[in-house]
Length: 32
Image (cartoon, rainbow, N blue to C red; front, side):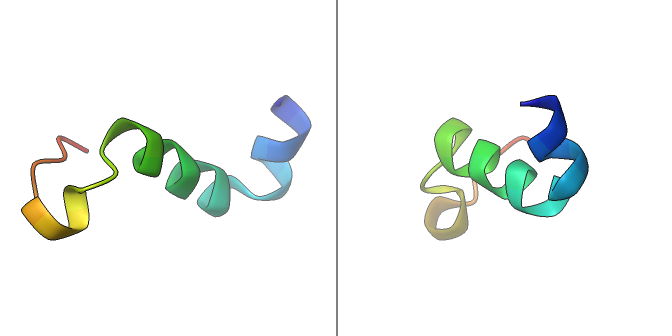
């Protein structure tokens, strides 16, 4: 996990956002 986060921090963060708030783009309820 650590190595992946260091290699692709942007993509890893994007994946986390999809898990935490998958409908954030449509509803805009994401708190990040």
